[in-house]
Image (cartoon, rainbow, N blue to C red; front, side, top):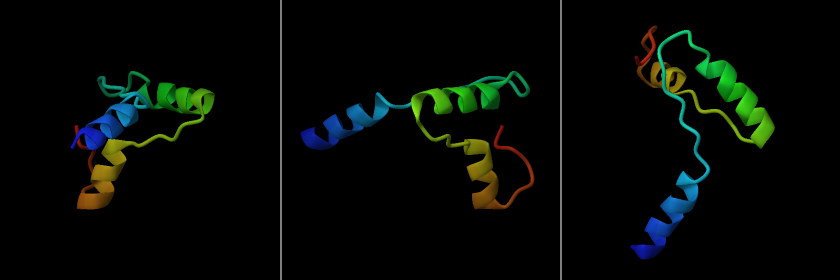
Length: 59
């Protein structure tokens, strides 16, 4: 259990979460940060739409 908690803590240190209203530039900032930090982007609105097949965002 302790090892699992430590693993989660180290993973959480690598996460940058962007939250905001539609159209404020979250995707633009995410792309720039991912490029600078050598990280990938996970778009939860896109994942939601892919998983549930709806044509609208999760927001």
